[in-house]
Length: 133
Image (cartoon, rainbow, N blue to C red; front, top):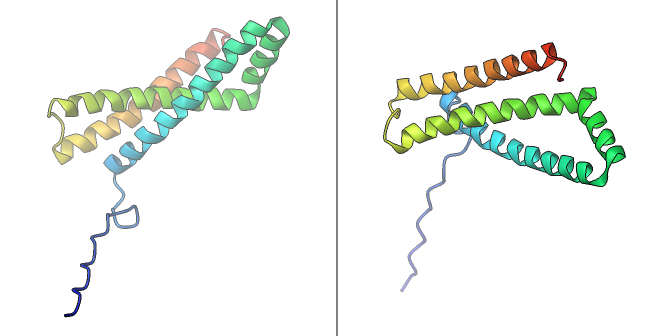
């Protein structure tokens, strides 16, 4: 008796199948900014270690963070914090069953991007105007 052939397993859709749209970008952005916040936690831990090691270590660390590349990293982490905050609030509404309609999901995704950019620019403008950055 012949063995039946195994059925072909369905393939999960991947990024080459999906059409790119704002909600897809927001979903990917939420995950990427979450990973960026892990980097922020490591930088915060390094700051605490430098602080514990004394004045010279702390000044060296602050010098690195105050340099041009350090500021670029901090700017990126600010974007990560605000975008992840906005998409986290969006997810909270989803937990209550609100905002799943495609037009609403698209609008809230755009709002998350706009909030992250606007809030980051506002925070950095304020910091630069006060001489803190």
